[in-house]
Image 1 (cartoon, rainbow, N blue to C red):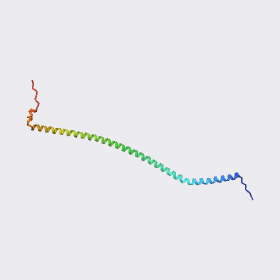
Image 2: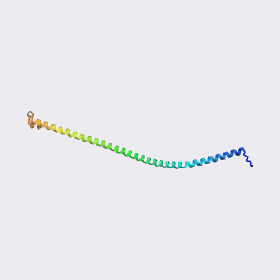
Image 3: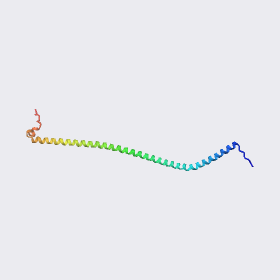
Image 4: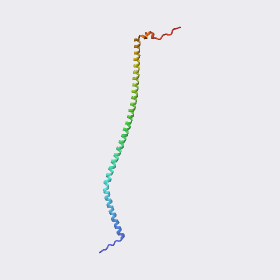
Length: 134
């Protein structure tokens, strides 16, 4: 029979070749299982990009809304301040008219009392005397 002689170096080479072939089989299996994961990850990244863009647009809209609300609030505050000053002015005018009305009513009451009082004399005596001409 034919004898096959292996040296120690050849045996090590055969073991290394066997492990390299085994490693290639594991790498092929890993790549086969990894491809669907990579595709799913690509879809997730696209969704993340879409969501990020949507969030950015929503944030810009929210900033616009907040800015508009701030402007409206400022406008309302200014309007209220103006109305308060207008109301204050109207209130002052009404108060002044009330004081004038009370003043005229008191003056009228005093004239009525003076005309009814006999001790005051006639109206001619109430007129100031004219200075005599020299």
